[in-house]
Structure formats: C-alpha cells, structure tokens
Image (cartoon, rainbow, N blue to C red):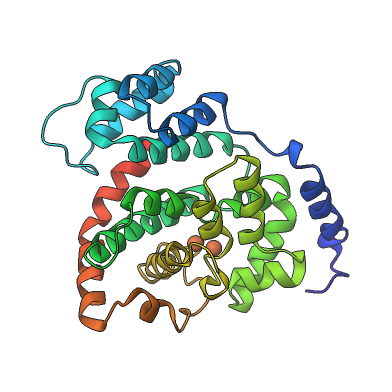
Length: 294
Ligand SMILES: [Fe+2]
Ligand SMILES: [Fe+2]
C-alpha cells in the first residue's frame, strides 16, 4: 500500500490539517473540565463534584448505575451522586466521567468497530488497575489513575476513525490482511501513529501529565523518561487485553512486549500468573461497565 494508493492520496495532508487545527477536535464538556479541577484541588468536597455531575441528567444516571454495578462491588445500594462520590472516591469519579464523556463525544460514524474498541479499552483499564493493586506493596500508586489511563490509551484511534473514516478503514484493512501490527501501518501510511494523536487530545483537554505520558508512550514505554512506571503498566495491560482476545478484529497482530517492561515493574512469572488469573476472573464484570458506558 503505497502513497499512490487511490483511496489514500492526500492522507498526510488531511492529518496535518487536523494537527494544525486542533480546535476542530472535540473539546471536553465544561462539566468534565470543572470536575477535573475539583478532583485535583485539595479543598474540594464530595458535594462540589456531585453538584457538577447533577447538572447533567444522563451523566447522573450513569454514575448511579455504575456505582451500583458489580464492577465496583459496593455492598450497599447507592442512590445519590454525593454518596457515589464518597464511596467511590474522586479519582474513580474522574475515570467514570471521562470514559462516559469520551464515549459520547465520539459517537459518530466510525471505521473501527466501536464495541470492540471500548471492550479493548475497558479490559486494558481493568488490567491496569489489577496490576497496580498487585504492585502496591512495592510502590504506592493510585489504581484509578491507571484505570483512567487504560480507558484513554487508544483515544488517538478515535480521531483517525471518526475524522478520516475511509482512510483509516483502508489502513486497518491492510494491517488485517497483511497480518501487521496496526501501529506499524499507521506510521508507514499516515506518518503518525495513534499514540501521538492521543497526545494531541490529551493536550487539548489538559489532562494530567502522567495520563498524557502513558497515552503517548503506551507502545514504547522504554522512551517515557517521565511517568515511565504508568507507561509500562499500560503497555503490559494493553498486551494482556490483546492476548485475551479483546482486539480490534479477530486475530489482530500486535506489537511484542517491551523486553524490559516486566523487569522494570518487577513482575516475575509467578506474580504474572496471579495477575492473569485475577484479570480473567474479572472479565465478566467489565461487560457490565461497558453496557452502562454506552
Ligand atoms: Fe495502542
Ligand atoms: Fe490498545
């Protein structure tokens, strides 16, 4: 598939246009921007976050349903946004609101199968959280930040898939039929991969820097000089999600594990086995999360 391919002529120019004119990309709804501020501020109370969420009835109902879902396994029923915030915590609420908003924002016509896309993202997120919980004794880290980075790690694909649906369809078709990793074909044909595109959205949305680094380096954590721990975790969770069959199409070929990744995270074979068992037994719960997200 060369640059002369009829369907793809001018594709690099179209991408350059998107990159130059970031204003054409969706902005985060103001409720979400304010909520991120509230979550990041040490003086915020649960009521501050709840007050914002309650301004959006659709978001409110999703929050309540998610808080009561088996995914979080809260033993008592939650009937108000304030108690959802208190029980789940600010960072979980941030993940939920961001996931729900991104799903809504990119609900147009896509070349990717959106059910598969979200399943891959949510399973990666869940795997990231389980890895962090497992590593807690070694290093303190917030499992919810990892969940959030996992949900958002492939958002760059959504730009390709929604804003240049035909071109990206051809890219995916080529990767699928030639059995090549999608990211390699993106680089070769589009000149930019989805991790770089994801960074553009992360910048536009002023996401926290650790999330941005994890998004841009989820395929090459060895190059993440800052926040490399989170990038390694997302990289590993991404591979696990693919290995469990949660990919963009059946039999999708993906990149190999970064050699140093597990060593950097200090995950030996026995630990890895435990992590995998935990992830596999949580797969059903992720279905419920997905159903509410959409
Ligand atoms: Fe990716
Ligand atoms: Fe991925």
